[in-house]
Image (cartoon, rainbow over all chains, first blue to last red):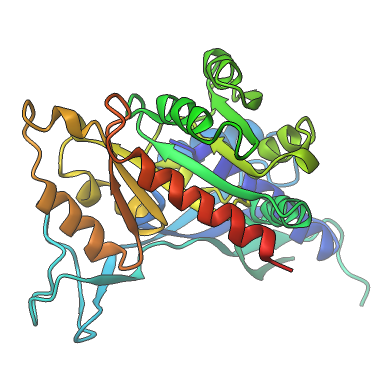
Length: 120
Length: 222
């Protein structure tokens, strides 16, 4: 639901980093998005096509790596995935968890095409 | 030439930076602050009204009201006696740190003891955006159902205080309090849970006492 703000965040961050690298055209972006971030890929791409227009990142391909929610039992440290409406640990039955994975929301890298060939 | 550039930065970086600016400003004024979140209709604004009335004469409150379009909530907070600022998000489903920063500029921070930021009614998006407040408070309400911690783990795992509102309706709705509380406790071992009815006033004192503790603690901070 908050994809517009997230998409704007991606764009600002990538354009900033591209400038620091000396500029050029951004052709692809690698994103890591956890299940808890509640982000719909298609919606981000939709906004991207609108707001990245007329920037050096126009038309960039967004590559999503989705990370499923993974809990760690606070008692026995077992890692497990949630089963429906139950948070209890399948190994020891303890009812207390920590989120081990699934809350990621970051840009990992992007592909930059230099405008002009670099001086040899 | 095409090359890959590694960055590894949080997408919410810009927001997080503005949240730190807000946090520093609030700390400078030794102003206790909370981000009040819930689904629409859980009773945030009524809680704000009761809180302002309950602390009147003791503490001075500032209220930042986030809403999609209307200023109804800010008017209610002002009528109850708080300094209030309305933020209309114009359709955005959450407040961000930049919006709150602008609102802080319109409040007499030096004259206040407690700041309440009432977020847009939504259990998903506000969880992602830090506003720079000290505490996150979620208002759940009994008619919403006892499955909500299982459906919205992001919201419940990061919360400092959970108010379970409308407990006067418990006889009329299907709500298993133990199931709800066990879901929250599984995600969050440090949460303070306060059952309450803003309508009857039951449980309100515990909340006002908790707020008073935060005001005192924040003032004592160096």
